[in-house]
Image (cartoon, rainbow, N blue to C red; front, side):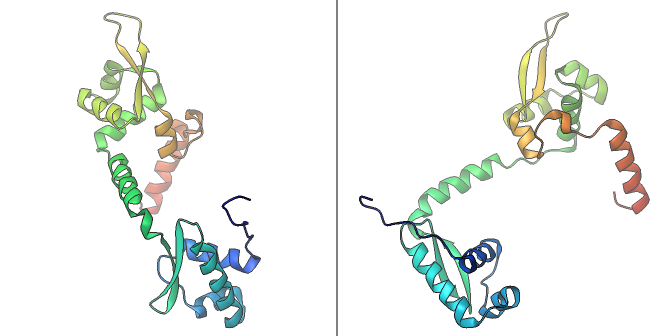
Length: 191
């Protein structure tokens, strides 16, 4: 292999420690590792040392001992790209008003649908809400409807499916299922 070192597979212990470190929000102590893994401190310490060496060679992560425990960090040399990613991610974070959520639901359950059909169902004008949903990439223009003026038709996008954890629009709960959920939440006192 020219210019690169051989990839070393992690041991089962190292994989478990790596997974724990990945989900931990605070430094993890030897005692905490021991409680979960039921291993001797020297075994855990050796695995941590091996992981530290592993991450020191050509990885975007590093493993450091801080505050009496161990924690994964991103490599400081990647701060610039991570800053760009954070800024992009924050811009993509979508907070929707109640009106936007209602309009999005109308579109999802009735697509393709025109603005006037959305307004008829909701009982209020919604051109600004539609602009917001379009700008966030949650809906798209899907052509023109038949009829007077050939109004624009709206559909949800793959981003909508992704945000709501759906594989397809058919996975949305039916109206009967929504009524059942609503009744269930009313009975449990959750609103």
